[in-house]
Image (cartoon, rainbow over all chains, first blue to last red; front, side, top):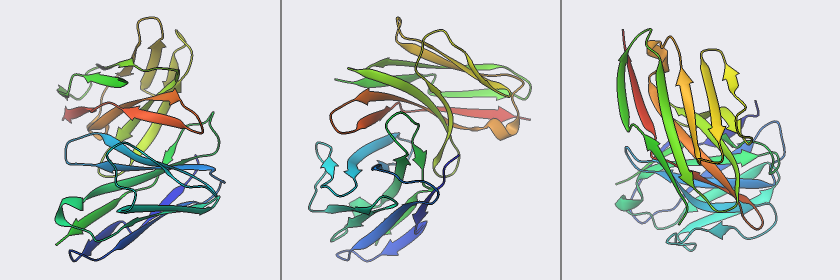
Length: 115
Length: 113
């Protein structure tokens, strides 16, 4: 199947700093990428849908100024958590799809810990 | 409100047992239903189902969708300890611009040697 690479896999940052997470589709072009957040023992919650070359569409309750998403190319989307706080500590996962009729492939996730 | 409900929430079986995981959904503009296996990190894709009554198989795993009754089942036969994971069901809804995936809370399967 298609490969999605997410980096870093684990990051620890100080409260008030910003963290950037990258999501790359390695062997296909992804017009659409999705960013999810997962809390312990809970399911994946969609944060935003990222379309190449346009602004991301955020789900209700997700602060777009706090979670900046950029999808500058067909193979790269980034999520920047700005002014991180301990409550932002979570597991963030991206997914990408070749086109709307195919399944979504997931990156390996990023464990963010804000101290 | 769109929702996806999985049952049971958790399941403990012995190696060799057969298990059936359930997923029911209420989604506007249904497009497909997907099953994922999640171990320590990201989910890995198992099946994508779009048509009713057509069983998909991959080794010891199989799945089927009933679009009339709005549910799907995932079967695992002759379970092994390596099958221990959280199994996620997701339903794709057609929306303007992109298709969103709505996830259930998952079924945590533990296979005991």
